[in-house]
Length: 339
Image 1: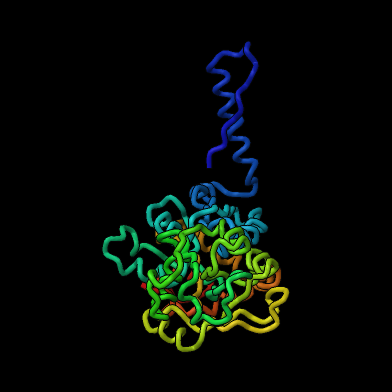
Image 2: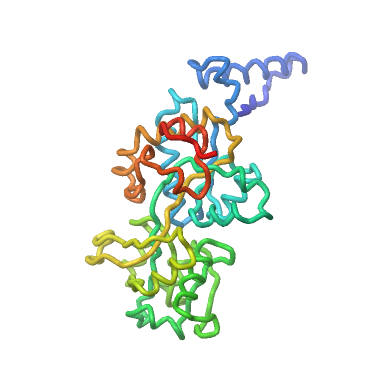
């Protein structure tokens, strides 16, 4: 981490003196930021400033990433680890950025991590490691107030927002339509609006249907229901067909009363999201972050409803993960590291 001294305005000082003072001031600021840290702890301070790819504005992963960083930062005076949640385009972007080193950590859906590691064209995929399982994300099918849809089988002839091409939402919507044997030409229209446009498009009667996987409750979905939108159940036969092609999908539901005006549970299917990093991200930094998540697990679930489904880290089954557990996380959870 570099801290730049501001320009010194004493015009009477020579350039060499000004540079010396600037360097001294920078060093004093850096040392003052972590007064109790030893020289050894400074050795990997760069990796202890962990940027975390969260998700797009209005998406389900954005507040999850922010909540994780808030909890980590609450202990930063003792751990010397600071977490910064970065707004991103979503899981695919996060994985690509982690593999390339542009991000140190990122949130991604399990199935995407699994398929990325299987793709021989993905450089750096074998270096992906799981730091924590963060939350469950049931797939929500939401219909607009003027759509007239009361059953999933009524999607034919309707306007469906597929999501931005290549996004998580796009892939999920494609999988749902395929499980229903619906082709794009059987829809009245297919749009490709980003997550930030979901509220205006549904409530403004520009589209009839949106399909999106998020942790619930979500402020976005509360606003959608407030303008008259409704959830539609995903029936068991569609769930079964979706799961046949994706072992990472599991039956889930949106719990009753997750939102105002939603007294009944909503049948669904969904996946878990995981926090990932490259294997070469500093082990000590990941250990300290993961240890904080373990110690503050109850607080995370209590204070952040979207993380209410976060499993206890020490109960993680390494062989059930889409990538090996990071060495630092395995040490924090006292679990064996998958080779």
